[in-house]
Length: 347
Image: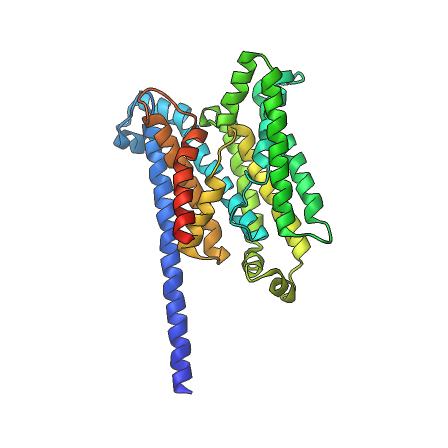
């Protein structure tokens, strides 16, 4: 009896120690994200001292007036948008991988990013229907992404649903939308085709306080609603049969998760363009360091995605001094080798 009590106490002690280590990892991701935010604001065509940026952000005495304008009016919206979009894509990839039990699943591989590109290119090539282009392009991307999501919802709600089938449907839509996108670029005028290409690269320079507010609000609401199903999503990793045996309505969980992920990622992508690999790499990093427990995995993937895109934004402004690379190119250059390392190390 005494040995059993001691063993139980030891198990509880080890579990508490494991949870503390996991929270330290989450705090590490948070620290990297905040550091990336400061350096993202400091870098640009005119470099700012890090100390000056911190003074301006905290409203401390002695901050230069010109630096204050550059920080708050020009760079802060883009830097915050990097964190918000990275968080949205990280959470989206994490929950889709959990839902489909497929490490290759992400908003990009399910065709949602390609759908956004098609919607934006249609508006750029054929007109904004009387709306300002700054509003019409994100709206077109959002509508087409939700249309693609609707197709996924139909398959997810089918009685004979199979996770592999949904992945195959997503890949088929990816190639279909990319084919239409190539056709539009082929028939469009050269300057229009170049404008479409720039949007597809993904860029944070499109960020404004208005678009940041919308993206942050949608992401916060979706993450909050996803957080209500943390134990259900954790149980799903034990297998669909065991999750159903615990009384979980799998079809309802699938639809709810897909809807929230689709709305969140569609909103993020529609404002900044296509940014790949974050929804694929960030969940893998979080899973390696934090495990499958959604209490830690969800915030870990969110902060890993935010840190990844924030660091990529810094790199996009420092590769060539004075030049600004589209951040989508940088995430691909960084993400591909990193992803290969994950694949090879995990076999």
